[in-house]
Amino acid sequence: MSFKTDRLVALFPEAYAAREGASLLHTVLDALGNELMAGDAAVKKLLKSHWIDYAEGGGLDGLAALLGVTRRLLPNGQPESDDTFRPLVRATVSSFQGGGTVEGIKGAVRAALGLPYDLKLFGQQLARNSANTAAIDTLIARLAALVKVEEFAPKTDVMLGSAAPTAAGSQVTLNLAVSTIEATPPRIEWTFTSNARQLSLTQLDSGESVVAEPDFTVPRGATLLLEGSTAADFSASIGSTDVTSHFTRLGGGAPQLPLVPPGVSRWSFAAGRGAAFDEDAFDTGQTFDAAAFSVRMQWLRLQPLVFDVIVPFFTDAAVARALAGSGYENRFKVFQGLSHDAMQKVVDRARAAGVRGMVQYAISLPGESSEAIPWDDQAAIETFSGRLDHAITETQDADESLNAGALDSEVEVHDSSEHFAIGGVFNVAVFDGAFGFQ
Image (cartoon, rainbow, N blue to C red; front, side):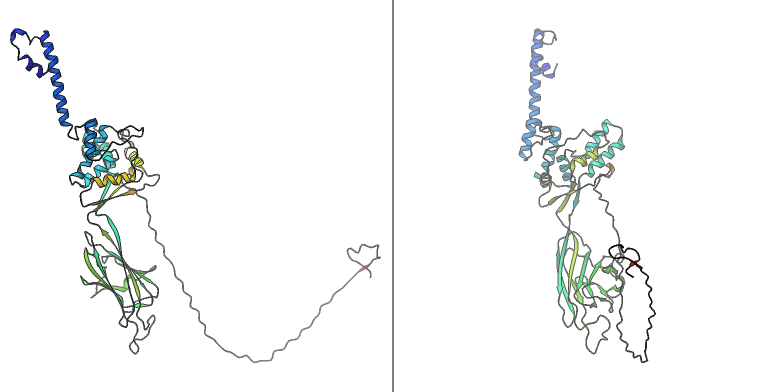
């Protein structure tokens, strides 16, 4: 008996025996009370259907339609159930509220893949039904590793410059305007058209500078490579030859390349003048002209308001590896039509206003174990090879000499031959062997 029945019974006097459970009046009032209870439940359900967490069926479809989201299809062509559709709708709401947190983006991408939106909550639900916390933690870690968000997406920038020779030397200034969140080290390729000496690199804003020894010469057509923003990792090389020892910091000390700072900066590259008559010794590699050169300056820029979402290229296989051996292989559903373009749309909906998100796909190598889920470690091996340059010097000195003397020669021939023939008859003997007419 419901409380609605109790309230109806209380309206009748005792004489009607409405409180007697076996009476006809009580039965009628109880049926009426149950109908009123069903009506109350329907009204409460209608009110709750305005919330994504409680809406079901058509009500959930209506809320999703307001957000531009529709149900995905299972491999058999049937639409997905409320259990998997609800997290996707919930993940889309943040795009209309100016969301875009890292966890919100990860949850939206996981929901699109059919995985739990909130892994922490999912782990708590699993813990209620299982005491194997180690297995649950392993599963949660594998699912979390399927989607990675890298804030401040990196981008490689390049600046080129060239200098023509003058009487005082050759010099070029590069003006950089970098939008980045922190200073980063550059990589410099410096190519010369003729023998170059007295080299210097200066960051004009900070005054930091790297200079070469006065007698150090870069051969014609060679490229000088400079790397390393600290004294410990600074390196200078020409081809396979390490020339780091020929460089110092301006004023003395171990050299290091200046960092490329955020904002505007100026960089000066200079090569000294050529030889001057009656002043220089014209030693090896010294010429009248200064060296013309070209510079290629490259650095990694961390872009503000840009992030990368990294997911496996073959999502089905990656999810299967993550679930292998966990006992939950059949808990998650795979959807039709989840293309790479669709994944970008999910990120676009989940990102905050004014922020740009890009989906990057990682490819797993064949034979990866299930423990190698986190990222597609492609087992890159760095090898070092050296080239031996062998030079041969040919001396073309000419010597003239005269030999005088009497030269004579005499030749005696003592050849002799012996011949023996057995006589033969013409037209009778076959003349084979040692036969002849004599």
